[in-house]
Image 1 (cartoon, helix red, strand yellow):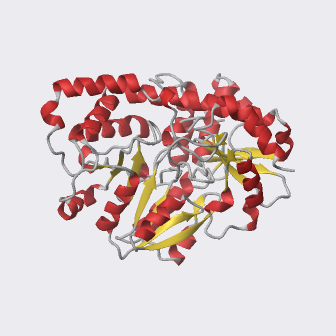
Image 2 (cartoon, one colour; image 1 turned 135 degrees about the horizontal axis):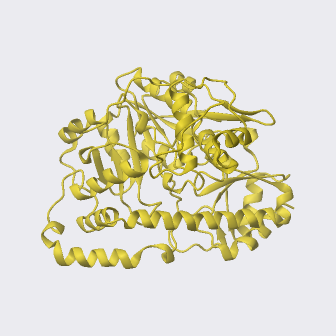
Image 3 (cartoon, helix red, strand yellow; image 1 turned 180 degrees about the vertical axis):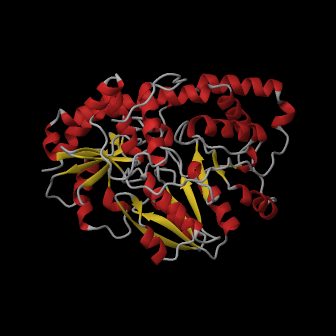
Length: 466
């Protein structure tokens, strides 16, 4: 029976401490692939802790791919390729729906707009007033091409505290939206390369690459993420993925596939992975999934994130973290670009993060979305639709999948919904060539749907089945 000490926990909760102990034993090969772990009850009894503590620890290990479960048999250690050498600290795909203005739908399950009631206007106004009074020279000083240093320092601190990423401010490049940053990366990495995107995936990413007239390859996926064999077959040089919460399937890439991808990238000097971490802050159960960048020892991962999900869809401030060996190349090749985000916004956001307001806002919004998701799930489970519905991938972010038993073609069903004031998208719409087994699966993006309309919206979805 495995045994761990629960003294000197620091700031960790019991389940986080247990999760870290088991994870470390797996990485150190104290626990081997295929080895059966103790049952929740027996481990809880042996460690003198509650069963729910063990259950939460196991759930986090399963989410990250270190452990898997088999019904009626128990929990087992997954087969992963561990990296034994010590990693030295590094020192040097947003999901945006194409909508604008006020929605004319009764319930729009495709929109990512932010309700004005949840934006921190009073704090934002307070910080802006203080900056206008005390920082006038800085506000009117042209920023460096990568963005002002205080914002990059604030982002670096946030990434260290919340994503366990050790990066320097110099590695961070600020831009007005991820689309702009993609264009910079194409110039930095080369237009002659083959760029790979996930299939299915968020259409705008491939559209941006194709609009720059570069070779864009659509890489097929399995239940763990993109297929390594297809990467090799299509001679992909730069892969664009969202491993912590894939859109639209909701897949969380397990640790074994992450190491496989890093191994693929390390085989060639010109290979890179663009990690789009677009809504990692809104994993609703368990801890945030560790980033691919945080386990990258070969400097092959370019990390991208945005504030459009955490603040508002109209706050067009994004950033990327370059591997340290690309920083000098970036500035030598692209130094002439001006930063596309105004100083007023950059300094306000820098203070918003560094003074702790951003952390409080994320915690508040996570609780809000958790409640909204639970309300929607309850509405489905307590309606006639429940007999025809299966829900999956509801924990990773702000959307989940709804599979319906029905005879209508997806397109006809969506048209009926639209006539009833419900806007919904199907999983098949995000494939280049949709396979037959993805029919009748729909994406429930609930971030812009009010709780007051959810029961009626579910009723309208149920009526459209017949």
